[in-house]
Image (cartoon, rainbow, N blue to C red):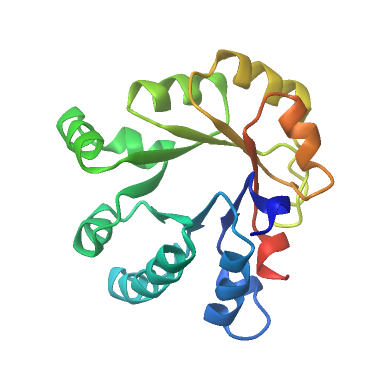
Length: 193
């Protein structure tokens, strides 16, 4: 097991992979990150489900948590008990739907970009927060990172683990953890290993 990655969450983006995506994911999962979030928002539900089934099996074999991204019905069909949501999707749900979600899923991960988002996510049942954007990134060029002070402020107020995203790499991971985060999320760093 690779201790170097135990505080990281791998966010997938198959468009960044040079070569076979499933082979790349096998490499990533063998590094034993804290979790994988299968993002791939551009796929149809059917395409996503086919891919999710394969990734969930790889994660299960290696003992790595896997969160599906916003696809509650796909997660239900595949027996996945971890879901990742954006604040807009979470807020578009009725209270009854959010209540049902809390009953179904063991872990609910929510993307947040402000103190208000974090409060909303926790109130709606989040068990972990993905907080961004901390440093400027290639995928969001020109968007100024919110910095380590922002991480510290949110972590101090947040009752659930916070994982920083946006320009996170193994060199910056200790900085975000010193600011109170449980770890960090990496996309291009994992998709190009």
